[in-house]
Image (cartoon, rainbow, N blue to C red):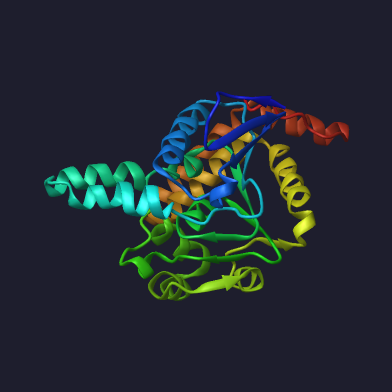
Length: 273
């Protein structure tokens, strides 16, 4: 596996078409601090430009996916400083958007993503998992959005993504009440795609990532954008985006390869062009 630039709080390695992003603060239960946010944004710029990436797996080093925001460096540090800083509303909004958008690049990738979650994913940790297309949870995992316990709300994507995933009514319970749920309940409501024994988490995530990496890249990219458009745009514009994506598929070498492979009775070799 090939590693990218050195980071202090995260690791990123690439094996074939699959990239693996690991939160790497196990001594802090992978709590997110300002440096981790900066490094995640930096990696995002790199991966958004990588047209050869076929799937991204996101996980945490050690026994915990992510405990959320670091209570010292994040809660009592950066967020408290921003709250007390004498800025106008627009200035605070601009600063807040930088932090709140830390994970948005995952949803904007040209490939699918898988969160492999064990231990617990609270607050910003769960919001990171929600930014991925799929979530696989180890069976003893617990997840929750705990921001209301600190007089805050989850602003790193949960209010947008969670209602789409589990429905508005259940999302309101999780967001407004700050409930913690286990893996079985996460699977029941659709927050988790799979729940597996703890020892099988890595292999399950790798297996799903490999399946996704073997799908036709142009079709996957177009389908993901069309699904997102259906939530954010009107019906006519959403249909148009899906149709434009289909036209790109029909004009691609991959579509020709798919037809040839079908006639010849072999597995297609997708090239993403």
